[in-house]
Length: 529
Image (cartoon, rainbow, N blue to C red; front, side, top):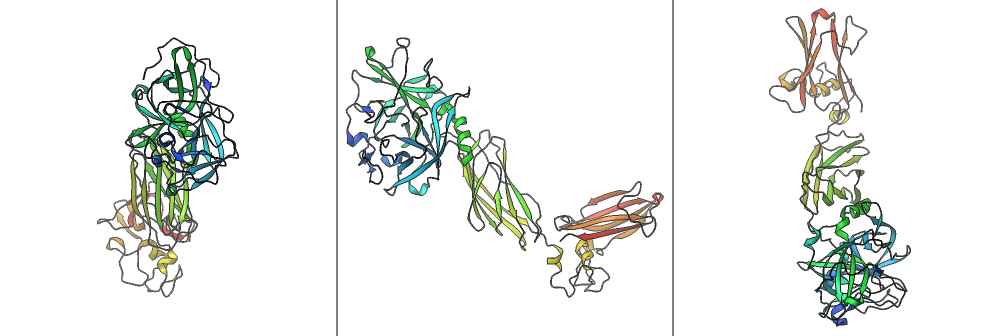
């Protein structure tokens, strides 16, 4: 296609807004069989009626364009707009939609599906000026099972990479033609349009190839696509036209979406979506569970971490989480989480920033009495997959541990070894056996010996004592009374694994100088559950 020579005209954009009857996209050699994606359209009222995909549509398959919707409205049903996420459509700022309108889409089931509008936000440029792109939010998600897919956006490294790419250009009345990208421009001194970056294509009014097209009144907001391996991917929406009769040319402007991807992401993020890009970049999201121990009967929560180690954002992160025993809540900043069934949750977010981390909290009002929590994560983002399997231990509290003994009280001693149940619990004993040894093959109780000028006290302690609701602390006294947790001068406390290692226990060593004046030490054990 011949492009207009530079510097031969003064630009004053003609917006594509007309009162019905609108003209619709002008297609050279127009054929209803070739250039309308739907049959039984146009017609009013739009709903109910039975439009169907046109098997002869030139940009076959027509079903690939089910993400184009139109207002179910008595007078504005000819408008066309594109779905860019399950909750968002993109349209022209200068040609607003009514707040109470519904948007119709033809589903893969052959039926129309209607969605209301819950709000809208114009896309701004780097100077925070409105562009001719507006994101409208639907009042419900367009489910993939309907056969209605949001469109991806073609993001290439530079504007020059788009030049000469063939396009499928839509106007009103589900009409489309074929053109190529001829260039890019930012208009000057054209109020309402000089804030937007445009791609453009030139239409030769003196003659050309059948199927070429030019915008007309009522086409504003209609999408323009490039086909990538049979998939229509967006580059923008119709904004306006400049006429140059002396040159037999019409220049048509498309609000160029790839120039505003980050701004679009920010507007879509509150609903948990970003723009889907043809080239999403390299992201690498992992999943990690903590080593925290939960306690039955107590409120508890664990946090899952999702770090992105890649150089690009992980757009449209969505995961399914299966958790057993089922939690009472799953939530996190920036996430939208929904419970699908007991123990089954779906969580999504617009993205995870490059080198960033997203956190999810899983909470129980009262942790169930089980040995562990099993967590399985399966999902992904636009650049890859996310998977994790983890088992988080649920610690036994004292009540669960002692259940079944003939005396279940803290002070009880059913094995008559002189060690109360609570002390056996804290030090790793067995309340059912008077001869059982504790961790490290020693008696499950504190022991003292002399080393040089120090009293040395050693005792076993659970590594997850706090999680089990246990408090195990040494106390000191110069006489049998006036006990204090304040260590005598020069006292050194150390905790280290047993040798060989005993799972779940460590050995605490107290070194108390004889010169400190302390004459007595005891270990106080209490339980909070």
